[in-house]
Image (cartoon, rainbow over all chains, first blue to last red; front, side):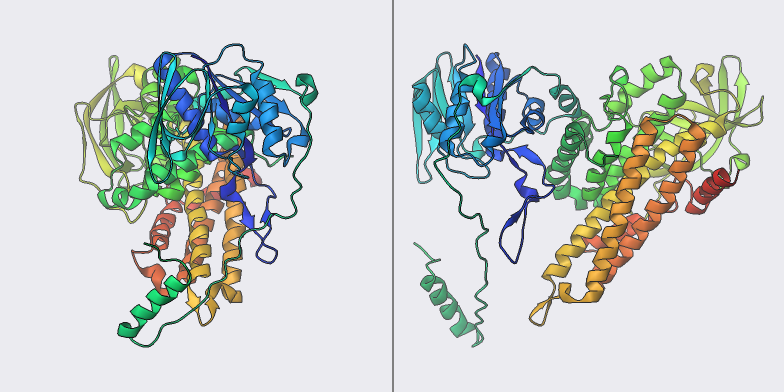
Length: 256
Length: 378
């Protein structure tokens, strides 16, 4: 069974600082990586391959550094990669990403499953999976926290926050996963060193007939304000507990 | 000149960091308390390729080379210095075998050290001498195809665990130190109770008693009478480990100091507003950065060594600077923490005890400076 995993190149969010004065994120010297939930999708694909065989193909669209960044996915177990590379993908919206991924996936003749994270690490729109399914005309299952593949059937559990939904779907299908589906493996040194030698096809958008148009302008990208209210309750425990509860309730922080 | 890691190096560093944060940090206190690294941690490090990172694949390593070794060890030491010590000691013994061993010796001993099935040790120090090779009293007397070794070795890490140990003894023919590969716990080999060292807790430190230990002549490491060469250049590789472990502790001290300064309240702010605290943090950062690039450079030189003497000088210079900077950093970090830093409950106190060890081990720093000056003034 061949499995396609869509991954996105983002800055390593753990290393992004926020400039206090302007609330703007500082991206200087922050290394690029693939998104955390993408790694869950990749891990799931590798586990399925380990059970049923086949290939795991990482597919991605991004800026020039992608050919290097994708080594992380290859080290984690992807067998090969198909990339669409252009500086124009920097800050591109979900529609552009889905269209580009669909074209890249078109290069693969035979696949049973397309896996991706429920949302990207940076924009987190959650749209790429559903858009991709629409473009390719495939069934989609989103927010999957558990997955089983038996012959041509996929059995999935969807985590819908207040309930779980069991779903069955035939292959091929698009499945987006949530982070609790698994714990991604840490790649070994040997796998990291072999990653660069795995097969990789790199295309420019024009090679695949991809047109990059922008429908969204980003006006600003700021960290949320985090001012503390600094309310002190100092009238003794008897009164303070009630005052604290009332204050929390007034802020809408206490719900039943 | 490019001070950037390659993507592969960056990923190896990241893998080590992730392993250290997920698998080591939650149990770091327990490792220090038990003075023992759980076998499953050794196994995980072996699976990830950390134990054999610097050795070629044909000997069970990864082929990543010595350049990548500091990247991994730094991250492990940042989380648990005792685990870094185990890795570093194993690498010291294995590096001596790799540098001076015959192909048969390498094939026999390196794979088991790279996979963590056995752990290597390195034994030069004796009760009466630490660094002076002329003073060693352990003897090796040839008896047909064997050497019979007698003597005592002091402060030897992991010497009670199975695996190869590089032992230095004066052989009866040359009267000079000669290196041998001995299998730990073989007949005639025994160890003392554990020494209770003040830091880097995670592995045993014992004395080794050698009573009529019979070693095949095939286990001679390097030429007869060349023990000093094996010691000097073998231990130069070991210094990459000491420096990398120290660097990890220094980085942890920097992070703890920044966190503490930003959290410790004073009136309507935190102590980070005080220029004295700012100066201390800047000084720590300067030393960490200098130590980092000297250490990474030493890893590179170990991998690309052309002249062993020149490498020994660079290793000496780096070891003296980095371990001294480690002590400085730990004291500065203690100062930032005030009285809290004196409490075992604060990790900065552990780092202080770890750092103080670096200046003394694998050749005291004054000896390092003799090596450096000797080379410069020759």
